[in-house]
Image (cartoon, rainbow, N blue to C red):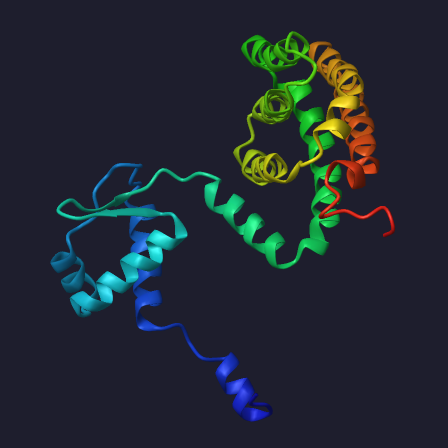
Length: 245
């Protein structure tokens, strides 16, 4: 491995030309206020705009595609993509596949983030939000006790609807991938289902605080719920969490 001046030189290497062009194309999308579905200039037009070869434009387009900013379709060229949190979810998943020992840190982040989101949701929620939050809780209560997959889906839907009720797109983008990842890793139906009555009661307390538009009560109820879930984590997700830690 190189070290000394050579290593510093490599670390300071400027971005490749396609990356520079990709950054300029991204600025173009923003400056022109382009919306999802809007088409970008053609490859020959961009080659002329940025005074680079069409090969460089193609590589720059792939960079933007990896960032999730554009879609590229044969015969239709390049258009602005709908920005969503799927790529963040993929990054979380990949990171934890290589570093599963950091899953506890993910739960710690959730314990910081979601109570704050619930407090904001208590202030910002609408009656339509409240109906959407109530729905998964009521549906879960009406399911057979052994319907693990359905209960888990509704559990995470409850948390997602609370987050959506904050009406803050940045908080939504930060928290949604965490819950999506939890859907993938819960693996002990018996442990999860045995605590389901407690989950229902804790969700009801969060719901009541939101209904009362009481931010501190919403924060406290969410903290209590997630703290209990975190303590039971080694039983729910034994491959990623160990009670010996």
